[in-house]
Length: 89
Ligand code: SF4
Image (cartoon, rainbow, N blue to C red; front, side):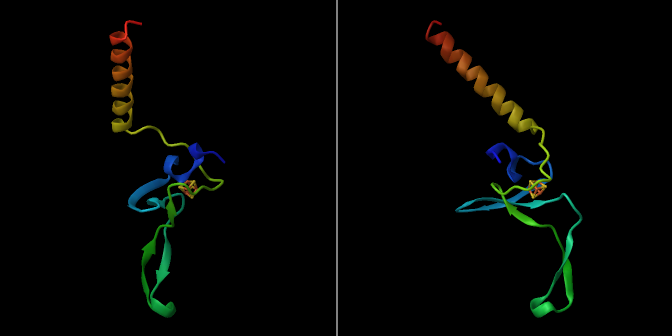
C-alpha cells in the first residue's frame, strides 16, 4: 500500500473535517448503514463509514483531480518556470 492509494486519494472518500492527527472523511463506496441509539435503542439515522485520510482498503479507486488542484499545479509549474528563467537557464 502506498500513500497514493489511501482514502484521501480515493474517489469514494468525502472529507468532513480534521483532527490534530489528520483529516477525517466518509467512505461512500456502499450505502450508509443504520446507527443505533445508546445501548442499542431506537434507530437514529444511517451513517457512512468514517475513515482517516491515511486509511485504505482493497476497494480503492483513484479520484480525479479537482479543479482547484489542477489550478494549484498549473500555478506551481508557472512559478517554477519563472524561477528557472530568472536564473538564466
Ligand atoms: S475505505 Fe476503501 S473504498 Fe472507502 S474511501 Fe477508503 S480506500 Fe476508498
